[in-house]
Image (cartoon, rainbow, N blue to C red):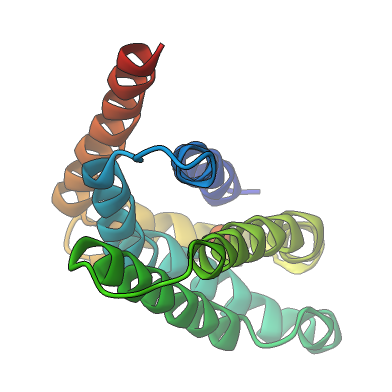
Length: 189
Ligand SMILES: [Fe+2]
């Protein structure tokens, strides 16, 4: 096997932490209190860039290898790329809804709640599908040379797939979001 599945699992855990922050802020909003809009904006900017730049390309590569080795298994997983695009659309709706709130435009509290919950729920479902279907299918079907090829790309500093500087930038943003949320929660308490 390869390190990539472990990396992807760790990335999922990190994404889940940010989803939890989003959910906590939404709970505050739903109680009629003011959420930390800076945190919400940081969460949105994290999702606007991080998955497409650093996470999805790794999954797409595993998926491409799976398609070549076991087309039937790949077929049963569906269209991963389309799912990732749907994610972007849902995020766009979320960003728009937040923008409406921040610029004082009319938006029903219920609509905002619905849009955010919808985003969180789909993200979690998508992560779950990848861990239950995609990763095990890849572990089963990929051959040592496939994993070696993936590892080689991950270790190649020139490869956009392993852009350490960008990953570092997002690690920083991720940490900041979690710290912010901790501070905000402490202030609320
Ligand atoms: Fe994923």
